Length: 370
Image (cartoon, rainbow, N blue to C red; front, side):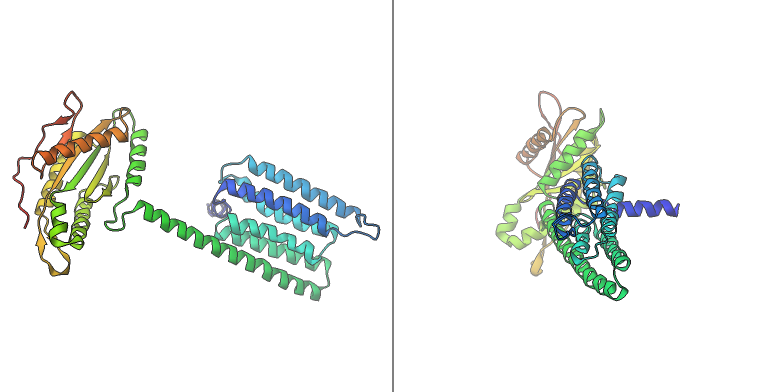
């Protein structure tokens, strides 16, 4: 059991963040390694290769590298064992080539920077550590096998510092970049004032819910507007309007299931996507929300007191596989317009048929603003 968990962990470490980028990086680094190998091959006084083993090692290195790249290009799955085996195998190939050529020069040893570059640019931090450690071990094995111990230890120390420094700098640079990208994505997906998701997330969630729903599964959408919100901004100031929106978002969250999506469309318009929810249940949710908002006391910032307000709601639903998000949104928007025209503090529900908006109105009298 522990062995299996360990294998899964290693495969996770060695899984590229982006398979396409990792494939291109591996191909590019293999080509660079092959070219660099030719440059560092020892030559005799006539300009010919100094030994047959050197020729064999170099040819084998190139052929294995090319074969590895071809194999990686055919493995688009980042979880494939090939991605776990081949990068460390590249280190073994480089070390074997140096040993066969009996070349422990600094130039030959620095070929092991290529696995470090791959690990630091394409793998998670632990994978980069694996590749860097493997390269350092490879340098040690080559130097100790071919050089006097004192010279070998000096070379190992100098080259290892270069490899580790390269890895650390690249990993930190990537992590800073990834953090920046994550922050930008969060800003694009979360409304900074209310903490609700943005319209883009709503559209993506609705598409996923509608396309993934089985036959007969219903999806509902509620659109809400604060009644008299412009008056709150004009009389109390925009900070007061912002405070009301934040409090409203909290009220709505308390009425939502884990799978529901609450989105700020813009201004004071908020949408609730209710996957797997029938129109009957959606209208019950409308009544609950109307009551919750009526009863809530909205505290204004700066000691300006409090107020009460109401919302108008438009509800619509579709039954899979018919309908898309655009039609669902248009129906809910029309129902919202009808609710506001009918006097606000109520909901209207769009239903199938010749009249797209049902005459469904709450019986309660609107609460006056405090």
